[in-house]
Length: 134
Image (cartoon, one colour):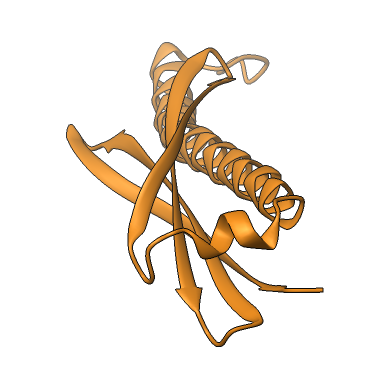
């Protein structure tokens, strides 16, 4: 008569192999989630840098902005931020477009690079505002 109280060695090995395969898939998915989370954090920081620069433009005198060349992107700043232990450098560009005598369109473009799949990929975020002479 057989003893049915326990599991055989083969059953334990098969169960361990199945658990290993499941955990392997979950760890791969976890790495993808972590990578996307870091990517989103870098984008959120770029939005923050753009908004900070936009506030600075809104507090700048109209006459100062009108002296900028029309529709030419000018590098105005390089910002370095620490995000989850990574140093991320953001380039900030400003483009002034003269709409008419009393209105300017100012575009702030923030650029950054990120390494994905052993290749450097460039990203950017642009915000626009209209500045009026009071």
